[in-house]
Amino acid sequence: KDVVPFYGKHQAGIVTPAQDFICFAAFDLMTRDKEQVRNLFKAWTEASATMTSGVLLGTDNENLNLPPSDTGEAAGLSPSRTTITFGVGPSFFDGRYGLAGLKPAGFRELPRFQGDALEEQWCGGDIGVQVCANDLQVAFHALRNLARIARGTAVLRWTQEGFQRTAQADPAGSTPRNLLGFKDGTGNPDTSKADEMNRLVWTQANDGPAWMGDGSYMAVRRIRMRVEVWDRSTLGDQENTFGRHRSSGAPLGKTKEFDKLDLAATNPEGKPLTPPTSHVALAHGDGSINILRRSYSYSSGLDKQTGQLDAGLLFISYQRDLFKQFVHIQEKLARNDKLNEYIVHKGSAVFACFPGVSQGGYIGDTLF
Ligand code: HEM
Image (cartoon, rainbow, N blue to C red; front, side, top):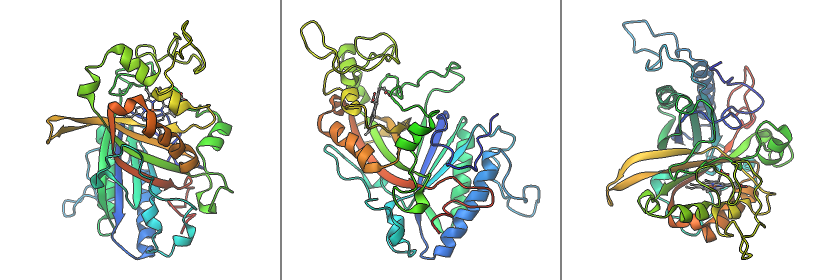
């Protein structure tokens, strides 16, 4: 029950309920040889199928005269519902591999949004790999071995670990809270509805190049939270910033988390109950455009310059169309969101995530 199948129509790790931990990595390719990239994807496929089923990599794990094929730190541990999700960034199509013509129309790094304070060290990548698992050591092991297998072909460009509350701390599995203390994920589309996922998450056959059918576009933003400033604001301000109650997660004026968001509701003075510049009001809009958020909290020690915590949200969303969905929403948020006082976007990347791999196939085989 601790195994999420690696092979399938769609890649695992997208509509899979979010596991407790993430190890995210962006890689850059060092080769100009397409064959070498194909071989890397083949090797990664085999390793991913093995590691997600909780089996040691390779055959040389007992020979005293050889370095072991598996680094060993996950030996004897449960597969922990590990998923490994692969995508390629816009730079993958820059002509090095003769694949420029297969780049989906309009697929490029995100435009600069108002207030962005992006740092090169958290941006871009030829390949994006999202490893999620219910155990951080198991997730780290998977990422480390993928990096090891890539040696000579691809190097790590940036990585970020993230977490949310564990199943042990919340056996009921209620919506996790972000580091600002609010339930995060309530307004996500229902992943159990295939037609919703086809409308919002999975790239459809005629959306663009055939190789992306049943794939999805991933947007990653490393968003730092000014937690010290937030912690000094009143509960009333905090709730008006998000447009939801902190304790229950309910829309303002309602009592239950999943009560319907009614942006037209007003108080006795005729003022909207949900401030129009609150995060939820802007992100929701008229409700027709949504994304599947699969974010994790991060805490990466101190910002040496200010002595403050470098903590926030490793925001990840999946969508069928980056510009019609993510960019459409983020443009509104960047301009007016009350939340902007408390957050700053430090990193950004986008990846075209392949369709799922079938047994005998390999990651990216629809593209090569
Ligand atoms: C809703 C937090 C960034 C898109 C929410 C909610 C919270 C939240 C607490 C309400 C509960 C829920 O529906 O999940 C945050 C924080 C962010 C952040 C702390 C940054 C640190 C973003 C970004 C986007 C986004 C960058 C996309 C561009 C949405 C959407 C909703 C939402 C689509 C659902 C709105 C609806 O109810 O229809 N967010 N968010 N958020 N957020 Fe964010």
